[in-house]
Figure: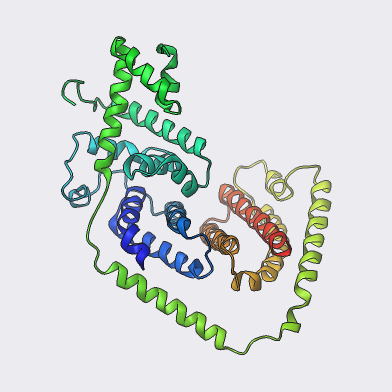
Length: 162
Length: 223
């Protein structure tokens, strides 16, 4: 379970941001790891195993969203909103969190992978089963929509204060 | 390179670093572009704060246990008396035959429906947006015949998927699992409301996807 040690935390974070609850995120990660386990013995291609695992995770999350485990419209409980320990919180975080809910799932996934988790467009493209340019387009659209939502909510900070 | 307000979208898309750099210079002296750039910067800066981290000491043991249970089940299946290889020699030929029969039947039904979706036409016959009892029966009869052909194909594919040895076959298996779960969900919803045409259309779309997936799987196996 080296894969879990290395990527489990990041996978939980992605699932949490897609599904909106810890319990659902953990279920999604478990399901993804079981699917990886079922196919891992036959898997060939070493370096891309993690990408493959992320891809399975994102598809599992989509499936759970579609089956009705929808992300809550209301903000999540405070204890679930805490960012990773030691990192400085950002004044836009809560507004961004709320705006993210309104994105199309693929745009949301592209934003989470590239902007939140730091994947390259190439990696995000492999995870989302699209090419690099499509990943770039999805991220562009996601940012545009987020910008519109945040602007409508008056959430942006004055330039000198940010 | 010199950028202007017209380069805003391209610069924000970020595909060309030299354009982005030139646009930043332009934005420094253009208030509307400066504002756009600043807002995008704020979104990017805030994004990492959305990372989540929490301890879940029970998760890894849970995954290990579930994986171990699966392995045991798989091992038990392997230990069970195997079917003689000769018993399965008919499978590739039968797969091709089934594909041919389904394709021919599909073509015949499609032609006779004047190019319309054969199943969709069944529920379009009612003027009422809610299906009548008779229309429902017609839809379900047509549906059953269609599903039976897919299920036959599914049975043929099953042994190939059970012994999936390549990532691509594993992917097919996963996709079919997802489709089957969607079918089960939709069927359960339809049981609650037999008159919901939207759900029936959705179910038809999932079945069509399953048929396409099975057909490409059989092609993959053959090649």
